[in-house]
Length: 333
Image (cartoon, rainbow, N blue to C red):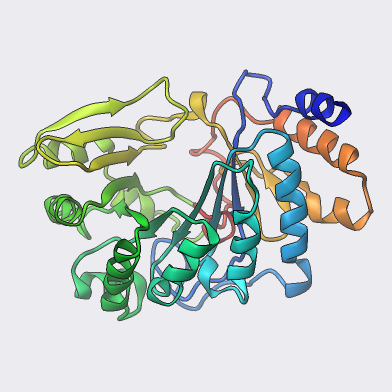
């Protein structure tokens, strides 16, 4: 009974009444691709290994968040599948019966290798970041020739019963001629599609402004060939506006942080690779939970610190003003 009282007392809700039940955990800031809108070709300084959360620390913190009401955990990166022994972490998280959703975001380059293990671990859905269905354009974007491997990974995942969603960063002059191709690919393979507005950060400087395509323009272009109808907007605790495609089973989502901010329904917080808890993607503030673990704080004290941090969650992002120090590879997008 005392544990139940504690759990209720520490329910995660910010001062604006937003219920926090979704935790994104970035397990690494490293990636095996060099997408030009994410990081420079030469790479960036990485967080030192001693500062990265150990798996045992991630599990300890995940258990605390689950006790506080988190129902969904997404593992992300960098590229999460390049971290050594990542399947052990996923298997352990999959044992948490109170967790309703365990999902993964990946660039797909190692999906074929890990797909069966993901299923056994309890992962039921993977979001694959794939910005082009054309191998040449893919290489231009990512700096790699791994397009065929990603496509095969998607096929293998589907054959094993994993649900797949494609995440596409819409970029003017880069992949904006492929909208219809993505929809057809989704329909033919029963894959949901999500178009994401490019977001500025410290490694894409003015590039994001040149490549930016507002959601309205993307929707209009898709509707030249497909009939879309709203499924979920506004009141749902989701960051994407979701449409159905007439005469198909798939959905098309739009994450539009610039043209259609969704802050009022944001239900997530982020745990960065070094243990920093961020309440907003575009906020420099946060508390380092790894440091608090090292100090030996009790579970109750950690819950208090998390609760205080969640209370500082801003009412909306300051995307236009405070993006200068953001490294997208550390927060998982």
